[in-house]
Amino acid sequence: MNLVTAFKALDHRSPIICFSHLRWDFVVQRPQHLMERFSCDRLVIFFEEFIPTDHHLAYFEVHSFEGTAVKAVRPRVPHWWSEAERQAALSRLLDEVIASFCGAKPIMWFYTPLMFSFARHVDADAVVYDCMDELANFKFAPPDLKDAEGALLSRADVVFTGGKSLFEAKSNRHTNVHCFPSSVDVTHFGSARALNDTPNDQTSIDLPRLGYIGVIDERIDLELVDEVARTRPNFSFVFVGPVVKISPSDLPKRANLHYLGRKSYHELPAFLSGWRAALMPFAHNDATRYISPTKTPEYLAAGVPVVSTRIADVVAGYGNIPGVFLVDGAERFAAACDEACRMDPCDPAWRAAIDEKLSESSWDKTFAKMSALVEHAVVREELHV
Image (cartoon, rainbow, N blue to C red; front, side):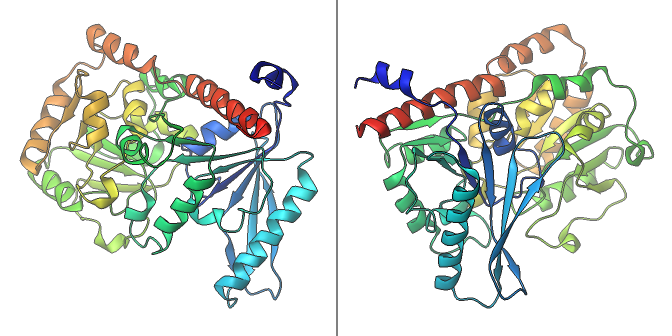
């Protein structure tokens, strides 16, 4: 059987089991955008990290969410079990999920290598490793994560990376690696350009507002944030997103710093519509060495100038885009905020430049290219190429 014949015979609706260290309903990121699209013509199971339980047996819950066909599976494992007992239980629960829901061999799609250890026995149509971040560099990363990634790379049929830096780091470790930087839902975030109403918890915050959307963790340069807020008391700095892996007490406290917590994906354009500039005050550390922030194109789609520290993938992808200010150091960052606030967000020349850039970055295009590569990997697996 040749490749053409195999493609014709292939069932393109092979179920996908997506293994993720992040909850489906935590924040909308790359996994949600891609799995939503895959779920339009096939079963998608989102297998989440286990949750410790006081129950004496391991079991799993199936969660459905309004507006999506994706089903989230949440394993529960007794908290006192050993690592070996936990791995055996997760392997058994995975087998039950496959037997209960999958009518064919699944495609296994991994966002974390740690979950491969209990899934490696599964007879899969293909194994995909979609590497969004260098998780081993993150705060509290398990010491065995690098070894787990090595095992996953040995089994994977295709590897995707979330940016250029990650691609360069992984391309010499696998023969089938493809770079897919963060994409954007232009229609969703572009709605911010026409919105005039700001959310209730932002209306009382003085103008001009500059803001950040995303997880607030060890990747944020809190000293930079504090110093910029100190030197620009006439600016209001708004942070939208959950605080993770750091204590809320560590956040800088000033009258012009406002932490509004996590908001739904649906609400984000309304917040952006009330900002003169959007911020990415990332620290330069191990956790940010390979990041390719999804928020860069989202901010631009909203028609808001961007001020960021000089993160490698942002410099490579957006360094020549007008309205994107890439600087390091509190003094320069504050000056860039000044310049961004002076920009006319309706300037047709600027909007034309960013819209041309964004036209290359839709999730639909990214999904179509990824889907074709996955199908090719399934065929090669069928043919044992």
